[in-house]
Image (cartoon, rainbow, N blue to C red; front, side):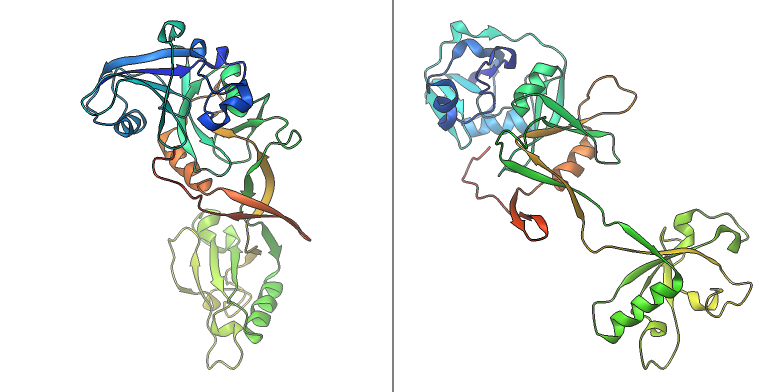
Length: 350
């Protein structure tokens, strides 16, 4: 199959229809006719494909070495020049499959290769996907449909780039941002009371963390090595048990299933036993700290770099998994609640 691929140049896209499906073109540009002059020709070659879906997979999963456009996406045009199985013509890459359209290639321009980056695009009601965009302000504004805001809530060197006014201009709620359960510090006595109360009333077993002081040991250990995870499901915290034991394991995994009551100064370890620096428990649920409205993308943003960079593969996998499922949001007495769901996708959905 011989093909040409045309993609919207975001600098010549006044109606911001890049990545928009065919159904909504008329709403945003006043017509469903394809505006050929906002497109660049980004590729022309023969490919080993038998269908348009084969083309879509090829230019998303395993780009040819000579291809420098972004991954084939909604709003792109595929021109089939010759094929044994597909009628020659121009095909609009839609949210589901392809739409055959009228297109004037003489009005399109040759692509000028600039600085481009691979980012994770996250949209309401859709699974996230990797796309390639121009590494310039205008291109980023096109993706989020307005002025951009850089948001860095995570420990990794990644930035969420979203619409600066997404919450206020009627954009659809997209994803919530969470932080891990917070630590609640307490004394060992308070930890024991909570454990015993939970076991007496038959609640689920609780988990706590005991951090022993560094001077309790002859060798230097990291805090993770000095922190032991314990459960209320120990004889020492349960009523009417025929023994007294506290099993714990170090947080770094170097010391597993230790009979802590034998070593702890607060238990049977005596004056020379391990001294407790602090104890803590963690909440059971992640805390929602923000809600992002409208399309956003995630890119690599190391402190030492003056510009955004392509998202490395390991971070792409991590955040693709973190934001995998779309969410629906509900107002409750205790604030906004988010419920993840699997979107209903028809065959060939992008």
